[in-house]
Amino acid sequence: MGAWGYGIFENDTVLDWIEDLLETQDLSLITEAIEMALDDSEIESYTAEIALGAIEILAALQDRPGHEEYDEDLEDWIDRHKGQGKELLVLSQKAVEKILSESELRELREESEGFEEWVKIIKELERRLM
Image (cartoon, one colour):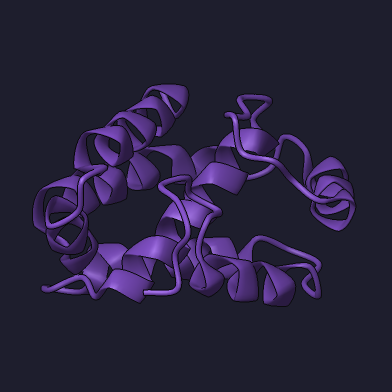
């Protein structure tokens, strides 16, 4: 896991995914990331990281950004798609619950000293989806 912190954007996996997202003109990658997390019986850590990144961006699209820092390109992408994706909020809540309860990412985080901090960040994201 190429992570240097507990924030949703503090890992290489999600930052690489964001580069792909910036090339899209719709929410297809966000939808796909959320659905993959829901469809996998065992959520791999990279799937969970990407889903959380997608959900963080989805929250920002609804004018509910968190404490993550967005670079200028991502800010521009969010501004162009502002208000889109409301139909994904319920699925996103389910994905977050599943990641928190039964993902490989959770298992990896449980083994670290900052597990409580990670849970706090994810629960804060979950609240912004409601």
